[in-house]
Image 1 (cartoon, rainbow, N blue to C red):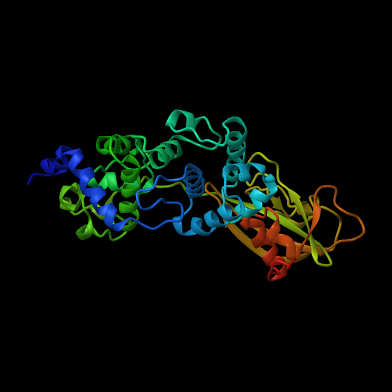
Image 2: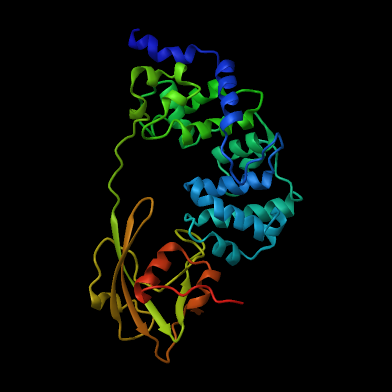
Amino acid sequence: MPQAETRTKAAALDPASLAAQLLAWYDRHQRVLPWRARGGRRADPYHVWLSEIMLQQTTVAAVGPYFQAFLARWPTVADLAAAPLDDVLGAWAGLGYYARARNLHRCARHVADALGGVFPDHEAGLRELPGIGPYTAAAIAAIAFDRPTVVVDGNVERVMARLFAIETPLPQAKAELRTAAAKLAPQLRPGDFAQATMDLGATICTPRSPLCMLCPWADACAAHRLKIAEDLPRRSAKPERPVKQAVAFVLTTGDSVWLRRRPDDGLLGGMLETPSTPWREAAWKPAAARRHQPVAAEWTDCGRVSHGFTHFIIEFDVWSAAASRKQPKEGRWVRLDALDDVALPTLTRRVLQRAFGHLPKRRRR
């Protein structure tokens, strides 16, 4: 069969037949996820919203325990809205991208206060809420309210790239992949179809070694017939991430450590951290670093920690010292056995682990 004919065969297939095949597969093989409704029940919009915010740039495996912990602590959107932001940030710690947690709290308050605790049931209304972009609005509208929408996450992009043999590299291919997904989106069971496509990408049409023999769309898949499924989607080369340098000052007294709060806006906004020098690409000489110390002290070099963010890597030289009588101007003392109770990002936890060797477990109450 000529290659051009092979590449267009998937596009010529009946979208209704493809949808029916996928939904039949989903009814037998859908993943059991803590936020997913089962047995023909309608999904709880609060559960769908909470899970979708958590799943942004985070894996399903990582999100599960956090989702269940949030629901146990805040069973409804009104409960979450009434919680102090510090409690929400503390419960979020470890999921990363903390702007999501701040927007989660803002959104909960808006839904509880302005909308009577009821989420909008359509994309346009959902997109007006804090922290909800086009993808998240489409996902909530489809899954929670069964609205016909086009839901395209990374799994769906991979499935579409292979089904239609789209070789344009990501991220340039995003619009093309969305157009392909829109051709297949059904009017009936749109929520199940969205979740089915995600499940297909997560369990069958995987990034490496896709299980094409088990795929309900194998006969229609152009990439499978061309034997290029594992090569798609293609990706443009990523630029190398710059490395920034800083010195972290771990100041202690007895069983407590001095922490300060980062500004609400920006990276790790509202989270707690040890005082540090500014983050820059040039290495810090000791004399220059000392000009940023929270108080004058005899600092001990505890070694280095590295942490990767989306656009750069930060390397901290960790210095520790016992506090003198003089106290820093900005921040507060936090007991080491209470660190699990505060909004502590992974980066700060790594700095403290480098300084202390380990962190105490949460104290019993």
